[in-house]
Amino acid sequence: MLASRTLGLWVAAWVVAGSALLSPREAHAQAGATVAVAKVTGPSRAAPGPFARGMRKGLTKAGLKVVKVGKTSADDDGFTAEAEKSGAKYLVVVQLRYARKKRFVTAELYDVASGDKLESRKSSFRSKRAAGSAGAKMGKALGAVISARAAEPEPEPEPVAVAPPPPPAEPEPVAEVTKDEGPGLKLGGKEGAAFRLTVGAGTQLASAYTVAVQGDVTGLAHTLNPLFLMTVGALIRAPSIGIGGELWLSYVPVKYQIDVSPAVSPSDPGGRFFNVGGALTYRLSLLQFGDTGTLYLTPLLGVGYGSMTVEGQGDNTVVVSYSAVDVQGGLRLGVALTEDLVVDLEGRFGGVVLYDEGPTTTGDGGKGINLNFGLNARYWITDMFGVFGGFNYSYQKVGLTGVGTRVAFQDDPQLLDATVFNGDFKLFSGVHLAL
Image 1 (cartoon, rainbow, N blue to C red):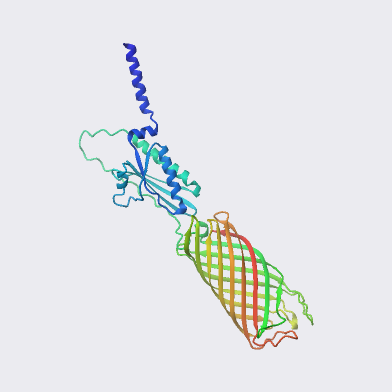
Image 2: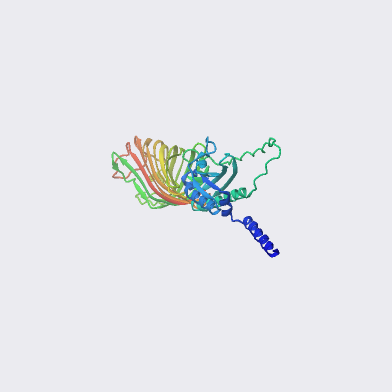
């Protein structure tokens, strides 16, 4: 009799201990815990699909029965209605954001019956490949919250019907401050930087200078061998409105070899090409494609100064110095192939408003046109540093009036109302820094 009663007590103890050691899945099954997951919202580059799948897996592994419902928000009237129809006790609403190559998560857990917010969690992850694991981690965390609530004992009924004290006021959520990339600045934090500096080197691969009279090319025309090139550029942009300013500069040293009769002195005069310009720009986003692709257009308007300065060669000067100022307008079409690789195609057209020569001249005055075409590719190695490369072609045509004072070759026509042509082709590469 005593042995039988002792055995019964042991069995009862094991039953009680077993019920206290239920797994999360068994605990939720006993509590009938079903959670509804609303459609995860956010831009495609934030990877809402993979994140949602990972979160549902995390909730399932936490022992919950998971059902999917449509897109909803706590700001909507009856936002828990669809979850209630599905028989869910809890509702999870997730919103994703993308800023500066980072994906931010805000997940909220609601009680379906009352609509009360039970939990709010925030996290972030870097790459799209991490979306699934980030979602699973968030699902596991919310599952633990639901598990803890399911394990809480039911409250004892109040012996006296008194009004419950008001719940403590929930602290206001801290708004996350993010950088407004503005119109057309949706290429990630790198391309959206407020300041960028570029320094490069390369070659002025081809250079041509021509003087023509009534369509006949004179002996004053010449071409140059490839020359060393140095470039510097800067960009400043107001991210909130997309308006910016640019400055570019190039320097090319040159040494001529002049073989004429009578000989000039010196026969190897040195000189340099110098170009500087600036423009106002406004970048517009045209198209978003894929997860990171962006097509954009940038109108620009500016002014440029270009010159070639060379040592004088005495009374028989053959190569003269010249400079020109032109007003430029153009367009830049760019595409962000990935978050790190951007390619720009640019064309500018200008009118030459001022042209000057010395010590002798090809003619008086000087008005004409200037055409500039280029391709530039940038690759970002880090958020602040990258490399670039490209090419540029420029062409200038200037019409002069009157008779020139420079010495012409014997068989050349008189320098009357002559036209001067300049053209060069540059290749370059370098580094760029964003702040």
